[in-house]
Amino acid sequence: MNAIFAERLTKSFNGRQNAVDLLTLDIPEGIAYGLVGGSGAGKTTVVKMMAGLLTPDSGQCTIMGINPVKAPAHLHQICGVVTSTAHMYACMTGRENLILFGQMAGMKTEDAQIRAAELMKDLGIWQARDLLVRDLPTGMLQRISLARALMTHPRVLLLDEPTSGLDTEGAEAVLSVISGLVREEGVTVLLCTHHLIYAQQLCGQFGILKEGHLIANGSLETLCQEASCHIRAGFRLPQEDKIQGFTKCGDGFWEREIDSEEEMPDLMRKTVAEGHDIYEARLNYPTLTEAYTTLIGKEELL
Amino acid sequence: MKLPGFLSKLIDSRETALIKKDFKEMWQNMIVRTMLVFVPLLFVVLLPILFMVLAKVLPSSSMQGMEQMRGLLTEKQSYMNNQQALFAIYSDYLSPMLFLIVPLMTACVTAANSFVGEKERSTMETLFLTPLTAPEIFDSKVLGCVGLSAISSLISFVLYAIVMSVGDVLLEVRSFWTNPNWIMIVFLLSPALIVFGVLFMVLVSGRSHSFMESVQICGYVLFPLILIYIGQFTGAFRLNAVSYLLISFLIMIIDFIIWKITSVHFTPEKLLR
Image 1 (cartoon, one colour):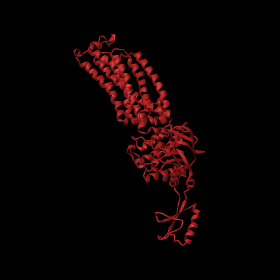
Image 2 (tube, each protein chain N blue to C red):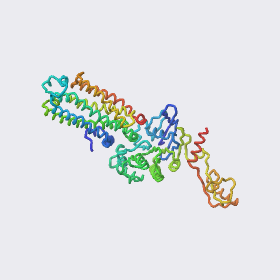
Image 3 (tube, chains in turn green, cyan):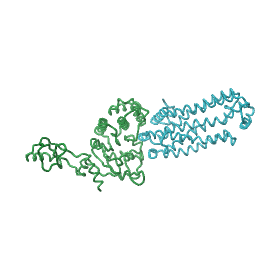
Image 4 (cartoon, rainbow over the protein chains, first blue to last red):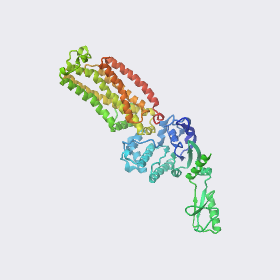
């Protein structure tokens, strides 16, 4: 069964322009899917429709077979959601908040206390357990929101910019917890973000959203193929040396595109045979950022 | 804090957690706390005591316009001297209206905090992400506000009854305990007004953007009470137990209509716009 399914999902807020337009997604169970796009691309609207906070104008979606419009409460038993606009109670501590949300999800107080402590330790916020939410920095708040979404051991996570406002250390802690959930517990994750580096770090499949349209979808390899982004072989040569068919990079390496990494040994042998001394060799794989930039650029040209 | 047995049967532990959280939030809000404590104290304790003391210490000769005011007395009250008459008029005409401000204001303010405040603090969306359904959230919040306002009103009535009994003894009148209107006011009109105040706030919560804005709207709800007070004081009409009964039923019908409207519109799509 597909964990997340959307078919021709459409939503407009002003009746003229669609915030999300005919979005079709099919995300299998147990993977992390990155829905990436810039500001106003429609990522938050997608999450809110899938979480049952917004009703689509047309089309439909299901999470583990549950329609969020028809059974939002049932959905929230198995699906944790983090959005930047869903805040915690400022007059309570982070721990009290988590226990409260656990209780509201039907957990016994003792179980909620144990789960809250477990999550706060995993996310590195245990030391702030007794601080009022109003006194916490953004990074901690973000992690408490994630802990809230994880209280009920969800099978699906819908995350809208979960690393926003986090420093590198905080973002790494969050990503490590999420990737652990995907790897060890088979949780399905829909990560909506504009942080392409984090998306690439966590996800195996991607969708690129632009002005509500899904312009590309698939693995990083597929997106790179679509964007004609190739692996680049790079050599560091003696300073005075030049090599035909290669371009010199800022860091002193000479680079050229190759179709696959299997070409590298032959290319190295050939370069040495031509009389070049290779001090260092490297393979630069295309990144999500490169594929994204190219695909978004292509879309703008159309 | 454990809920009484009959309430535990009506609501489950998830809703109880939400209600307890609402109580805690309300108590931590200074405006709500003031409304729950000082407004009742002012209207049902301090003002009656002030009136009682004035009626006791003011000499009859210094009371201007008492002849016209005596026209408001019933036949049974015609034996009263001016001091007694002043206290009886306060007890019959002014104090019910002042008392009714308590349930109405507490209901409006608690609901403003519970619904508009939650929206203002962006925690309503978080609530809609829990496994509680929208009707469960709605019912729990309404129940919490109604419960708190009812407790506040009941305590207010007990305090008011004590103060007025002392007044009856001091001024040697039997005004408060012989007035059957209070049964209707306490057991029918007040609960109906509490539900009205809460639901009215829910109704305007979609348009209201801040807790303070909605507290100001509470003022409009008091307007009909002021009109009834003026009408009675000018002798245009006189409310008796039957009138209070009819008004209570009328408000209950209005409550039912607003409840139907608000419960249908209590959806994340409409509230989180």
